[in-house]
Image: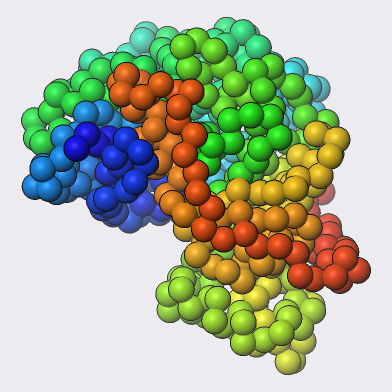
Length: 495
């Protein structure tokens, strides 16, 4: 049978999955990544560890595929977005650790640009907020803080890439320096309307144009694996940012359809058609995908800390020993006892966009237990996504009737019921929850000519959650959440 290998390089792990051409998964391998926090607000990854871990799991799955008698015909890569890597063009050696999308070190730079009145210019050109979340300010930081880097970049000796570009460069032994339109649209250097890098934006962020990869279609022939091993010779036929990949995998391919991914963060994308529009409610406008030169677009709301709050309860506080424990612990109490947790560990994303916000826990009493805290953590995830859904509905002029969901946390029935209760819409969980990798696999099949894009529409629901909480109680809980958000805002601004 013909199969496609999907690389799913995420914030906390590198994964590889094997899919047949109908989208059924058969093999999976995963390796966790080391998280580096050199100082408050800084988040880094080792690019070489990303590469080694991704190669290891991909080769593991490839060997299993061969052992099962499968033919692997293409590779699709989906990746954590906005994370910035800069490397030497000749040697392929990174000049510094990668600066991860969650990183806040460039908040003061973005603040100065906002004070100079540049927010609207950036938003209109890129569809993005002027925020340290995006790649451009991270690139400039690397050039200004690594000895000699800016001079080397201006001489054309350095390459920048998001993680897709980095993996492509390594797989092709340095032969191809490229990205796709979905990843390019997350850098703050890409003109959303013209569909290309903007010299004006490069000048604004002090990023030499020569560093940037070539922007191509999302599904196309990017090159072949040139390194020795079981992957050698395989064509790489799709690059796609993880949230756009999940949107494709969820078959949200016409205006009005929306999905939310519950991963380290939470990411809601609502398809808006083939013309970019600027959100009036502080959502982002992003390229959903580009196929045969035709771009489609989505509104996106990004929550920086989603499932990561559960990881914090496990690793930071020791409240639970494994992530699976949070649901039964949260179910052991009827409510949070008035506790509201705002997980603004890396600031607040959409629709608040406050890099100076920090996490808070409000409403603690002598009767508060770890079970109340666990339930408040799950509610915090659902509240944040409900805020995104409200913003998307306001932009669209009508409320969402249904939200398609995916990501590791969707195994948690309590979380999805909370989501339906606080969002006041149906929550639709698919039968195949690996939709990020699935989207990359489908797009790789399109890029390899194995399937036409118009026929990639498979999706089956496994369960639909509907609101059970009363309207009055939902409104009251959302109001308490809004009060807690206001108390967490501007915490580090210092004025």
